[in-house]
Image (tube, rainbow, N blue to C red):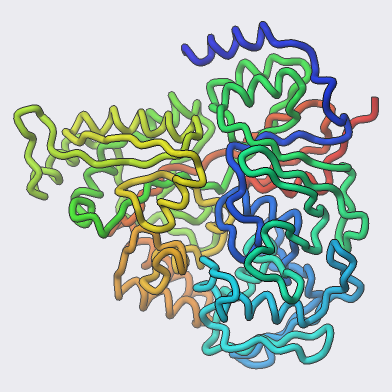
Length: 505
């Protein structure tokens, strides 16, 4: 309530629309700088979302997660371990170079052979080699069948870069996407402009400036003043009611696939005990948080997959709010309350993002009820994310964005072979049973068998709890009414910028 009153006071004092910026440039407010705009390297949300505007994969997917043509106009499985892609003719990179098979070969070889150090390398472990059969035909030769290769070659998962692109490519990224890179100032902004030679869609927007505004109250003020045009999933929900009263602002909302989760470091002696992790889960009152902090703009999750996905399973152990169960688990794990009623201290790292800090503060209060002292450490996002990817944490919270829309997320995030930074197994969780189940799902062509494998994988992960899935966040877009045709995607992607328009004065 105090924040709402503060925001209302600030808005009442706000001035007129800014007159110092180009009215043809859309100012998109984001919480943090993309850590790396090389699509082979960047894995944080801002990097992947902006990269998806600058780069194309060989394939794309539609709203039902079925694969569709992108840079490859077609593809065929020559045999179980050979996948052949036929490239679209006439595609140019932003600098005018034509796209050829050699660019695809270079993109993959640069990852597989270590030209760039890529956290995505594990996703292509099945690839033995990539061969240019002719300037517009590429063959992927595999070590074994891989049901997820198409997903990992899709727009958003990877982008094809020009042959020869090295480790400094992030400074001036050149892709084939509907927008092209103009400039980046770390912790200030990223500027992109429409690509008039786009093979897919030529955006109506002239340019977009992604302005870095970590503070949510400041972002809300920028939207009200008109110095900011747009924000997606970055504003505290308790500000939405106030912003909805502004005549020049509009709010769009749809059910989301982003999953907020709590990550544990299983190399930590305390958190290595599954009973401690389960107790923490039982001590969290998710319903109360979703009601009071998120104001109902979320749905509880028991899996990383969207609930509508063919591989989703709800037949898993669940951790509903249960203080008594949490106390019993903590007692059984050998952590009795001390004279000060505290069982132990554990540290949670967060970014400076307002929503994440608020969540951490609420978790601190709730865990204290069962004797766990949660110590909070807040860092600028790049530092926080670096610590997470190299395992320098006990607990943290992040969101899975986009990548969790396909079941290979289980391998990427929890396979023994995918310890970070090679993959996204940041918890350093290792389970031979899960590895075997996922290996079978990766190679099996029988959909019913794969579904059974993924159901088993979800049961194992719910039992062992290397990470605790909290909720699916609705996708909420707040935008100036001068921006039209804004259609939010469940994943929270920025793809709507490809078709959005500025209203004529």
